Image: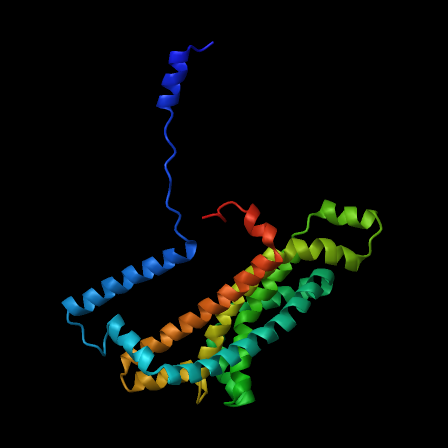
Length: 275
């Protein structure tokens, strides 16, 4: 049995809990960006880098503010192309993934072909789409759809196939129909994979829309970047890049919020989610 002196000594020896300052997760990226821009600004000032080679962050942000209306009008065009292309890839990709899971023919014949097509750079398909569909909106929507389509399909197929065989057999043994098996077991089990594919796909849809605007367009941030580049207006080129990055981050954040709303248990139970 411990004496009173030993107990007092152990209490004194016990390390005091250190209160750690909790910084919101969203601020870490902000602090990092501020540090990055400070280094960038100092580098352009100390090295006297010409503005047409590398403009300073202050000149870029000044240009963003002065050209905000122009950037917004072109950003809305790009955003419409991204939204339509991404919606098309979702409406085709998810049903196709379900068909591949339930059809042996599609799994053996079509799925390997899809993987092979994914290896083709979508940029090289853009001229063909221009020949087929012209310089209108359709070409940009199809490019955004094609680039975001494959991550969605492949992740969805992986997710639907990830259901444990014993769990599937248990569902069938108690007599539930196949569609109930899909709705109550296979679909919830596949949701993390589905959202993984959707988060990758929505950012790639931005890339597809911009590639389409590079090839054939008179509107959009890709077109604005091309015209600014032709005039050596480097601050405006960087301003369009930052606008594109902002669009991609907003779309990614929207999907992440939707994921947390639909699957609140997933983030809470995963190791590392608290970081």
